[in-house]
Image 1 (cartoon, rainbow, N blue to C red):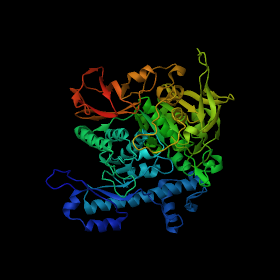
Image 2 (tube, rainbow, N blue to C red):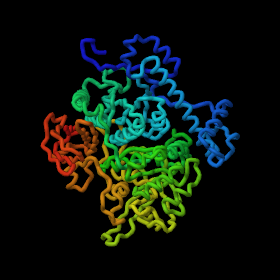
Image 3 (tube, helix red, strand yellow):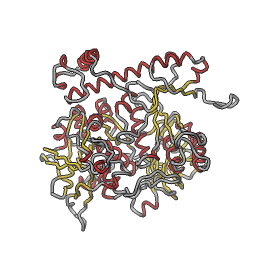
Image 4 (tube, rainbow, N blue to C red):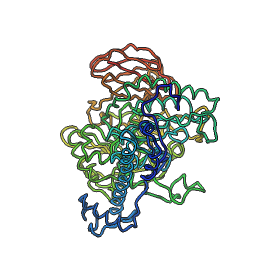
Amino acid sequence: MLPEKYEQVKRGGLHAHTHNIAEIERYAKTLSQKDKDNLRVLSFGDEISLGQINYKDPKNNDKFRVWLKAKGITKKELGVETEQAALTPAGNGRLAWYSQTFNEEERFAVYREMTKRAKELIGPHVLTGANYSPHHGCMYYGALYQWIDIFKHQGMTMFWAEDYIFSVPEPPQMISWHFAQMRCATKYHNYPIHYYVMPHAPGQEPGFLRRNMVLSVGFGARHIDNFWVGPEERFTENYVAWNYKDNFRAICESIYDSAEVEKLQATGKVRPAEIAILMSKATDYNESRLMVPREKDPFAAQCKNAPKEINQTLCRKEQQMLYLALRHAQHAVDCITEDDILEGYLKNLKVVYFAGEWIDNRVIPKLEEWVKAGGVLYCCAGCGHMNQYGEPEPAMLKLLGLKDIKTTKNAYHMRTLLELPLCEAIDTVQLEPLPNPPDELVSWPMHAMKQQFTLDGKTFPMARWKDGTVAMTGRRLGNKGGKIFAVGGLPGTSYMKSATKAIPWARGGRNMVYNPTDFGLIQAGVAQFGADEGSHVLRNIKERVEKPALCFNPEALRKNKNTLVESIVLDHIDGTLVTLVNWTNAPVKDLEVQVRMKDAPKTVRTVSGQRNLAFTAKDGVVTFRLDLAEADYVMLLK
């Protein structure tokens, strides 16, 4: 919209929306060749779902049977003869699972054809996507088939999502998890990420707006949309009020700073992690369909307008909480799916965290083989005691070294800063006595889910519930240092609970209600145990997980607390971009940063400070110091 005299991006056009091929064709007819050459993004819809096929259509049943045969799915997996299979959204667990998978692939094909047609009519340069909102069901956890698989199947070619994190009762750092999920989706075909970072004021606090802007660029977002930066209008919240000058300043400075790092970011790659959270499609599918009477949930039971049934979110939220706990321990963390495991992604990983009651049983042999080769598997939040069909899964119990798991719950649906602070512990866990026990036995509360393990002799107990039943186990597998840990509850959720406050949630005008920072040391140790490889219990203190960067906050070190500075390392042929995001709620003075880098850089430059920093380079580690307000980019240029 700038006048022609200004230099502009070669392609900067965006059109919203075309919802089907007919609309794409009508829209293409309105475009001149110049318009086509300028169009970069074609939207397929705003906050849409992917829709579903007609399960009752006999033609779809015929296609379903052909699809089953082509996939090699037999009566053994299906439960019935292929010729007798009928599409069903529920009921028979095996038929329902394959019906949903068939439905997804049919919908992927529809969007793939829309993308193909758009490229034919407009040009191969056009990107297709749809704006996804994370504010439904399990907040900031998108359904895997829509948030990951459609990009893997090339139904759309640009990930597009919005943050609005300031308006929901979730920790501000949840935006980091959001990018882990988006990066999982875009890794297959190197698709770009188009991200809304919302500056809306009143509502969004400028310090967190700055953090979100910088983190988004650091994690590789190619397009940033500050919807809406216009003056006060008729829209609710979708503007920055004139008297919120700090928000305008945060937008201006963040855009300015991003220009300097663009030469590294635009073609660089975020360094892959050696730790991954397994986003289980089996858990996503089954938990998103698990509805419980509201009377069973301590919070919904008090709500007169709550629906009769509510959806369980415990396992999916646990994945998010584990991610944040690991980031607080300064680990780089990626997300993978069960399909990734089947396709060989484990070979690049040293630790995998799995949280879920359901697991796709096809990956269990792959996980066993990987652990025997030296991997560390950390299981919790159900430990995969059921398979993708909702049936008991003995193979997972065998891998964990368990005879049986008994599961109880006292809550089902919790938002992190709303219900979780009020959630009462379901029980207390106590560590097994160590060879040199401390004066007091180490114990901590667990919340929402309790699993009591019966061991099969291949494992050793590491912690017990108050009644003496086993709550946490460990076992070795193979002769290359492979280990498996099982935790009978929600260690990530209990970690986050330790820092929450029982105060009302309300959106602020010029400040956040609060950002959790004061986490329990015991809860941190349990949640981070898999990544730390349980050194004091298994007598193995060798650190095998490489952290791309480490930050040392002098104030946090004095108080024996996590540094809470998130680092993102992005590598480019001309150097390395280190993005630093401060989640401590206060400026950090004299922050020491260590970055693993093969070759010593010629300069180390702080972008917000607009100056070069003194540094040392020794044994593949570059060390420098700086003061950090909310967030900064540091360029290590060769």
